[in-house]
Figure 1 (cartoon, rainbow, N blue to C red):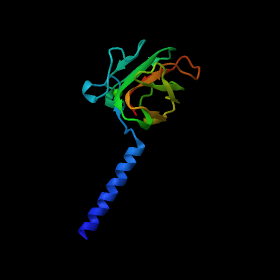
Figure 2 (cartoon, rainbow, N blue to C red):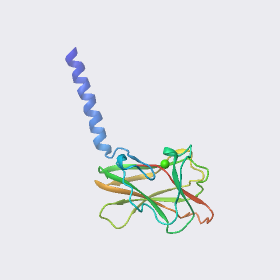
Figure 3 (tube, rainbow, N blue to C red):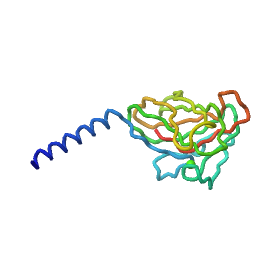
Figure 4 (cartoon, helix red, strand yellow):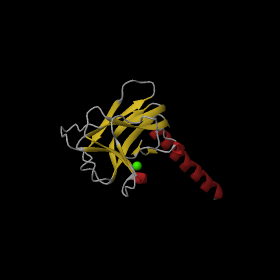
Length: 168
Ligand SMILES: [Ca+2]
């Protein structure tokens, strides 16, 4: 009896292991302005233009975020570090009433490539408070960055774009 139980357990683990390999990348969360110990990279210039840093935000992930008034050619990036290859879903954490961009576009950039890949867009104004799915992408193994365009692609010019945690 004991032997059968062991076999059953081993079989179950094999299925779980295979499933994990098939799915590829496991979700990794990187916040805005991450600590070095998080495994996420924060370059000296992880954004251009004037993304304001706001702390003591009770609803935001780690109680902080960055925000910018609609501005073309502005961007914020999250250094996700090394990720395994495979399909991965990009999710973004949005939980602040000041985030009003109706069509915020998100991209992924692989190390060594000069062009980012479009993943999807999110209406930050109508997004639910918390995690929101942007889209699914196939990752190559290696360093990856998530990039948020600070433009409002709906055409509105008076909205604000928020950058908080992302998961990939
Ligand atoms: Ca945050």
